[in-house]
Length: 157
Image 1 (tube, rainbow, N blue to C red):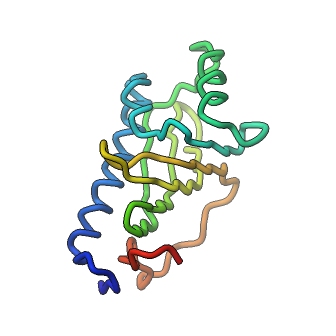
Image 2: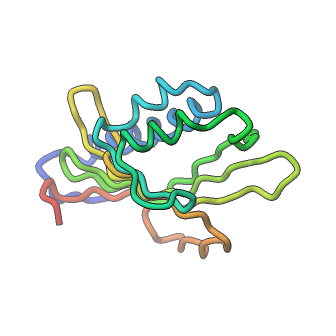
């Protein structure tokens, strides 16, 4: 992997690993019903756009939506599995694209295609925008030569 950046490729690879680890921790927190830990991965001004939501939600609206749900409203998810397809890092901004597979008892796993835009602050990487689309058909297989992550310039494209 080559990088046209002043930062070394290994530093970018390290950032990618931190981002992927954070995304996985966020879903582990969801399974553990640890909202405080889950929310550590979200920027205070994060926006959310999901297939099941009627429109774009800001962080306050997302919190209100989550507060109104009862335990009966939540699906009985046994496991959440993240399959990372690509993570790009441009200085203090990153974009992660991945599939989230929700394993639900007695049902076929549900797959959601997700794009997260992250920003880095003094506490680490936070999701500034989360876009999730429920997949009714599986994505095509990723060609073997397509990189999982790629180093990019410090400047945004």
